[in-house]
Every structure is written in structure tokens, then in C-alpha cells.
Image (tube, rainbow, N blue to C red; front, top):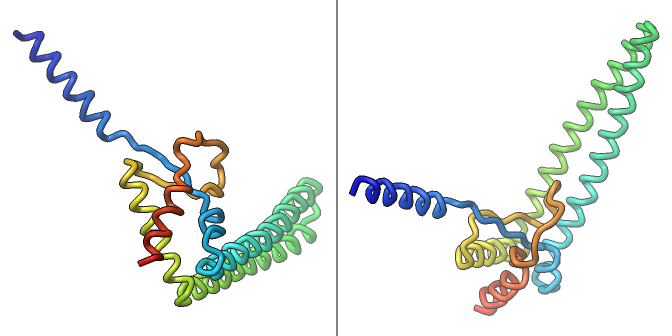
Length: 171
């Protein structure tokens, strides 16, 4: 009797643990947007602008890394006047990157609030949420998420999201 109760408790614990398992899906926002060329023009433009901004910021970050390496060399060579000048340039570039990032984020936020973009984004979000809940996923990543290198086709919900979005936009 005692062994049966222990086995029952253990199996319940495994069942509860399995119920809490996080399941992950992936969606290709660009493919979804491309399936709705008229409605998603604002979103596609937003994605292109975001990519352009990220490239500009990355260029500045690369410049910053070069200056920091140059400063390390000057410190090793004990050229302190050069080190001080480089520190000023580094700080100035950091301030510029911060300002650039804030301006880019403000512009992206402003454009995402434009009526046409906003309507499509809301419908897109609803489609992703419905599909994820319907399929039992607890997390959905964009396929362009940095660090996401591979996924099985079975977790790609792009086509299902397109179908759901069609039904939402048809209403």
C-alpha cells in the first residue's frame, strides 16, 4: 500500500512537471507581411527602417571597438596624451550612439502608431497569439531573432498565422 501511494505521488509530480513544459514556436514576420502586400506596406517599411537603423548603429559600435583597441595600445605604450584624447573621442561616440539609438527608437515607435501600420500590427499580434494558444505554444520567436540558429519545421507557425490573419482581416 505504501509503495502504491509513493508511486502515485511520483507519477502526479511527473504529470504536473510535464504540464509546465515550455513549448516554443517560430514565425517569419516578413513572410506573413509579404502575404498581405497592401495591408502590410507600413509594417514592411518599418522592418526595412529597423534594419537600416540597426546597421547604422552597428557601424558606430564597430568604430567604438576600434577606438577602444587603439586606446589599449596607447596605454600599453604609455602614450598618455593619446589615451586622454582617445577617451574623449570614445565618450563622444558613446553619447552619439545613445542619442542615435533613442532617435531611432522614437521614430520606429512613431511609425508603428500610424493608423494603417497599427491596424495590421494588432491583427498580426492577434493571429500569432491565437495560433500559439491553439497549437499549445507558450513562447513565439520571430525567425529573425538574434541567436536563433535552427528550428524544426514543426514549430514554424508562419502558414497558420497567415491563415488566421486572412480570416481576421476579412471581417
